[in-house]
Image (cartoon, rainbow, N blue to C red; front, side, top):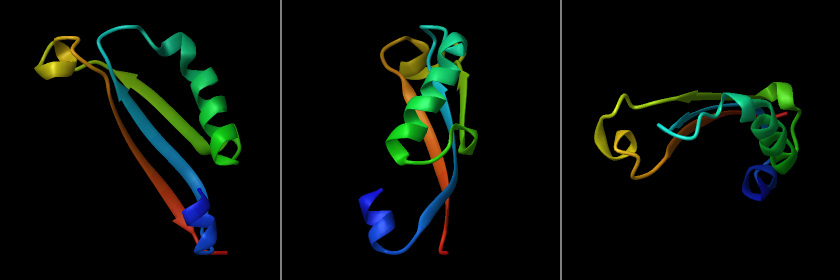
Length: 77
């Protein structure tokens, strides 16, 4: 966020997907959105968090780890 601000940009929104077989994340989604928003200095409605599984495939599917994919839309005022 320091680098984004330093260059005169701001975050419009963030969309993320957490890939994990366990634990089930649905009950935690709102808390995760609020925590990410607070850390980034944006409103919770600007942060999207989705959870999915890898259907047993690959390292995440074998429960060897958790993955997250995120993208942020930036704008210059």
